[in-house]
Image (cartoon, rainbow, N blue to C red; front, side, top):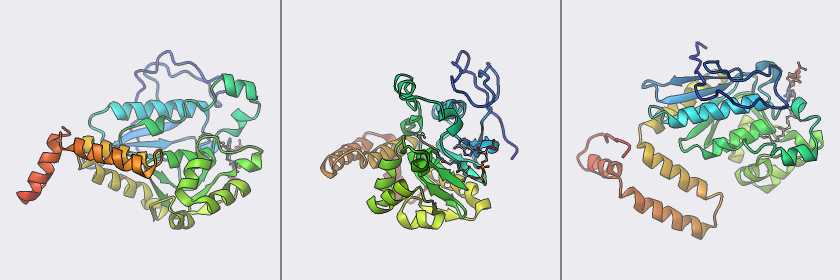
Length: 290
Ligand code: CO8
């Protein structure tokens, strides 16, 4: 892929990961990302694509990769031209989990006091929609990372699992929680207690992924979906995303109450007026994100 590598203008002075990936280098000002590739895609270049790119370790999620991923998300979140984001990996692996070699010698004390994993949930804080395009392995933290995204598309050969039990540990970034909400207790429990993998098709049947595509079509289809989202009002899209996500945090009554308030809120926007006026005037809406 002829990728446009994005600079890290704000990375000067970042602290090196203490248990870093193979090459422990700071993000010197002007340096390229080392573990990810980013570019803008789509006809209007309004889709931010982030590709995890640590193929020798099957995109194992080392500290350095996560710092770069967070930086890339922040860059796309701030970029007004970008309206949706696609997160993908390689054909063999989306991500084979947290970096086991980095974790191997950790202790309870340094996990606890060092706030291990405390910066892992940046994906959940992004207001723009994120589509995970999963080819190959999405294991452990890789499956958890995909589940932090808003939509999961899978390639036909994708495999999902929470194999932490085989390493003598358990999922640490939502695997027991988001997976259970996505696929129900029985399958989640089976996956978490056995470490068994499920195929893309099984993941679709269970509701973990929304669509399955041929491997080589996956990213293109994810970008296509992101472009469709990008045609709508950016502001209203963020409100809709917030409302759906509230379903994971609230009771039905609380969620419905929030939804109603957010629905009312859309009537304070120009885009709501434009959308309905365009329908009445039988023309395409021209949203201004206001
Ligand atoms: N960490 C570090 N290195 C890895 C990882 C990993 N998770 N997975 C693969 N690698 C490395 C291998 O060590 C190997 O490197 P090397 O050539 O230097 O030995 C290279 O990637 C290729 O791997 P394999 O030779 O094993 O490739 P195979 O095709 O034979 O097997 C598998 C592929 C099945 C994916 C196998 O590599 C595997 O089982 N990997 C581990 C999967 C796993 O257990 N993942 C869960 C990790 S624990 C976790 O994610 C906890 C999450 C806690 C929260 C994290 C926040 C999101």
